Image (tube, rainbow, N blue to C red; front, side):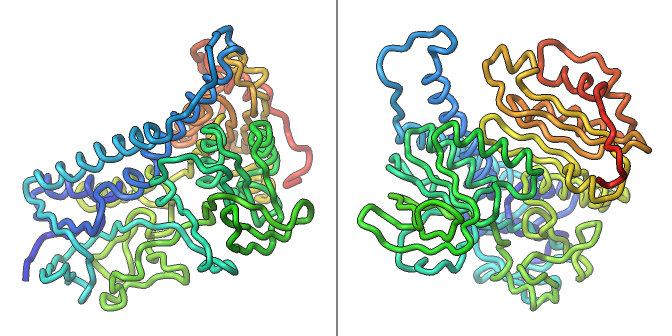
Length: 462
């Protein structure tokens, strides 16, 4: 029996930073990781995929060189082995860094293997039995493999196995028209593959407003990506050219045949094999660990952070989970999960930066609203870069003068959105941002201009 002051299960974004805080406060920590240090972001998420996105952008820009007066001789070619090697290097360096940080941390003991609860304060890792009065679960999630007809008869890819490819698919069929699927769809189109996106719903990225969804669709169509929505019944079957993906769309062929199929239809938490029932920890119907506003589970002394708690599916929300827990436990603060303003990005090109409420949700709330819009074609920085696809939009509560949400779909949209995020977190009226003096030429400089052009929605909630 090994006793520690605290135990952390999983080396995702929240875990290592929390270990640093706890050991820095003089506590002993048992850190358990069963496979790859760094979690989803480092190994199969943000770092490798955004590295691939950067390579795809370089290929795309090279093909457009003549638009900028640059003459390149010969065809632009993509070496997929070198592309993959670059992404692998970025992930490996980050993973090695996380593991080294933990193993060299004074007061932290690393255990490798599957963690399973044997009680509310006891966890087994192989032959080792560990106990601690404080246990933090940070086990992340993985891709859902849906029970499509024919799923067991074909080979398919997930976001994880996709990263192992060192060659270019002739025709990649992406099942799922949301964030992960669209990023892979565009990058592989830019690498040179034929790409088809199949989405069950009536439009892409359904959580966004319809104008955002439609603009994203247009961006993908302009690059030669086939988009099929309304695919109510999806099935898979072997085909001499690879895999036939059957759809029941309102128009088009009854099947899309691809050399490779990527399943990108959502994620599930890695909680099924933790033995949570032995600790009495409650999960919901999808396996997510139920938590309160402080990220505590129903069992005193056990917290859940990151993707496994169902309260955020991003690296930055997992890190914020760590910040909340550390501040409350070690600094005596009363930080709450419900105070977090949701913000995220979709890393197609141009990217989508999002914060707060959508226009649809704001209208449904019954508030009196002010809305500002500006096409990227009227943003000088976008014109100079010849990247004018997309638009920006902001929604304001007409009575409180507070910003409710915003979307920037356009060049540097993932960066420009942060000015709005900061104002919303400061909880001040929109006029504070409107009166700012931004730098020219930037994308951000048009946000105060857009605020100056706010127009009311005449009817409440309409």
